[in-house]
Figure (cartoon, one colour):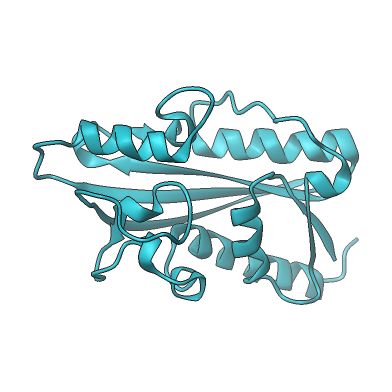
Amino acid sequence: MELIFATHNEHKLVEIRSLLPQNITLRSLGDIGCTEEIPETSETLEGNALLKATYVLESYGLPCFADDTGLEVAALEGAPGVYSARYAGEPKNEARNSEKLLRQLEGLKDRRAQFTTIIALCLGKETHIFKGSVKGVITYAPRGLNGFGYDPVFQPDGLEKTFGELTLKEKNQLSHRARAFSKLISFLKEYQATPQK
């Protein structure tokens, strides 16, 4: 089975390829010649994921899934949320996003946060949504060089390390994206085992 992952993000591709069964071939937007940035104009994670997945299905006629991830910080009333990737403005920059977040939390003791990933899968006329979340806290300074985005400033509950200090294998055992993708993979396995009409 061949699926398009509606992303240009190489970090995400590496994470997801390590999770997929061998009988699923994953291709990126670049692999199908889609070089444009698909607009993410929705005010929800689910809406943005659906925009990207349906765009590929309608433009290229290929089964596709897309994800959108947000970091929700309690003391910031859920911000940056759907604006996580562009929190510090355009052009999007991971280091500036984390720097802004740490500035916003200066002097605050409540550093509770939650990462949430929503995946939208478009298979012909069918659309399916999968969600994964992980709770944790925002650290006072970045730690670790692994991962991407806010990983060096997010410490999941129950661990002494940030996502940025974990190996890819360790992160894939508990991350929000891994939890959402495990639901997607379970669905795909069942879908492949069921005769399609």
